[in-house]
Length: 193
Image (cartoon, rainbow, N blue to C red; front, side, top):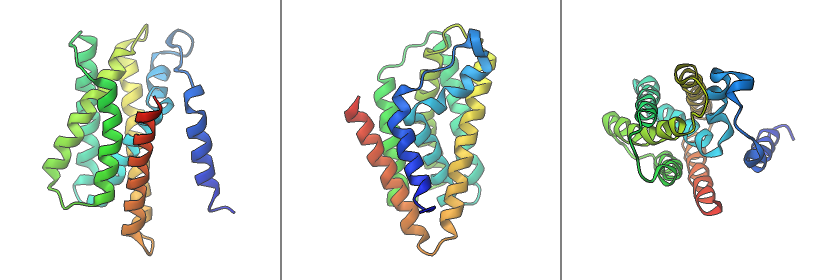
């Protein structure tokens, strides 16, 4: 029974995710609005946790380089958006990032860390641009600090899950299954919207 509880909690959260609203910066503050932003979008949660899972499956320097490049490039995308630089296909690329990163974890291809960092950076720019496009009345710096910290926490959760899965008996199969589930969830989000 207890083993099923986290899975049930995930599906309950996924089912209610569209009901969440972003926090109002005037009422809750710009930092809180930024911090909550990636946490209230299932697409953001899935890809950021999956980036951590991918980094954990690669091990070594990837544990900190892959998430760091995501957060750094996401900040660059945020700056581009608030400076008014247009970027086409933001939402479709964000959804594609969920599918792509999930597939990369599922396939467990032996990729060089530079290639992984490049792929993660590409998608992170779009995620950051989306955050910048939804800045609204929030202050840019506290909002950016909030979503950067929340993103790092989601990456850390993915790394923790990857390390925990790596210690289990069927580590490879479990990690790859988590990646496949992420990719399928990304497809569901793409076709449900």
